[in-house]
Image (spheres, rainbow, N blue to C red):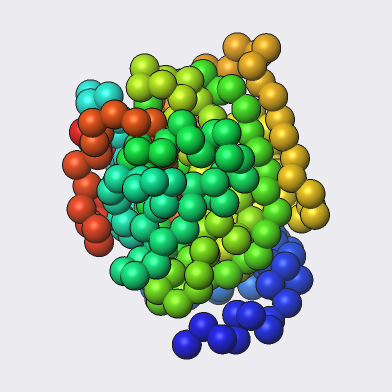
Length: 270
């Protein structure tokens, strides 16, 4: 059932979660984080700080860094940028992207640009969902030079499988950040999709993007700056869980993923 998501104050609840996740009361922070680790079976042995008590607040824990040995970066040209589960993967058919069985949405709506959407008219996409237990830092899937970034305001529906199967144009109606990179494959788009209780999104070159939640599209041009990121470098993070979507330009299918496949950051995608 997803009807309740249409009537709740999505942005107000996300603002509340933003503040909740930064409560520094030691007893409360430790109690809640221990419960979370147990409830979602979080593997803290991978983290650089293995003790709940060593985190300043819950968001500090949620966006935890991992030991360098926890994720190995594949030598392939494209790696998985996050831990999660593949929601969908495939070809972009005449500007349409598969959201869930029987539901499509347009790349133009997702990117908010008719011109850019045509660069991916017959390209390929993959959508990866990050669950609460996952590692929530986002890494570069390829070597790339940052060209631009768009913040596109929108709703904050959940992005889990049930919602994807029932809410039309889910990823194109939710708040999102679209990053464009020049790569050896051509111009690639990397989309960070917001969701209910996602208190904020941030990138390494901009910092925190939201909150505040804006009402208009914001465009950031980096074409005159030399911002280059290597495959495996940290790109940004979700302060709470969500979804990333990768769009590759018209070419042979670069992705070897399967729907519902569990993935880890750093594994090869081609």
